[in-house]
Image (tube, rainbow, N blue to C red):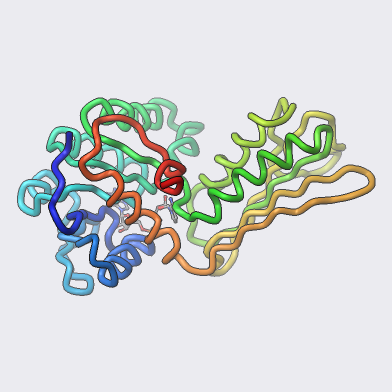
Length: 270
Ligand code: NAD
């Protein structure tokens, strides 16, 4: 069992200088069940809202110095896998929000497999919770999508996601979770990413579309249609606070649990 502090869960944030990392530090300041003891990032040492942020290469030293109960990671897959491996050695639980492990897989196979394998291996020593989306609304959407696909067999299904212009991976990790859920509920034999030229829709296709523009925080729409009707299920994130708070809820929930892989749906269910 990993260590757990009495009153407040002690959190270390990796990717602390990023859009999500900063938000996690900001949201934690308004809660009394968590305390961000430090952050790490690729950048030079800084301070964010009074929280010390250390260079990522000092990660092991940071674990020993600040004694966190849980790592909350919003960085990049290649860094994330190193952090999680070090946390397993130091007996620190891991909440991983970083996405894009599978995106790298297509270009640098071994590396990405190594990334996910590192998370799996770490989960033999410590609790690890990886989620592509820490919004409770998305959890509800996943259940709704599954029901809709089961209720509407034979309907065409297309998933469209929109994000800000800085997002690296496509489709989004959340879109991949939605696609997995659709495939588990219906009869689809291939994903078709975007359409161009002569691309008549064939039975069994699951359409996927990614848009990148401006500062969109995250939008996912699932369209189900036949010749006579259409159903659209849409989720829009209004603020990154929703992901930051969900990740902190996950950290509090995970602290002190036994080794293993956990899912955000378990946090939401309680
Ligand atoms: P960002 O680019 O703003 O921040 C990335 C952070 O990682 C920065 O602090 C940067 O210094 C650090 N970093 C980059 N390379 C590094 C390295 N090699 N070693 C150590 N640190 C490194 O990105 P963001 O918008 O904050 O998103 C971060 C990740 O979180 C992305 O994968 C994104 O898709 C994901 N995300 C997940 C959720 C969710 O709910 N699970 C929500 C939003 C974003």
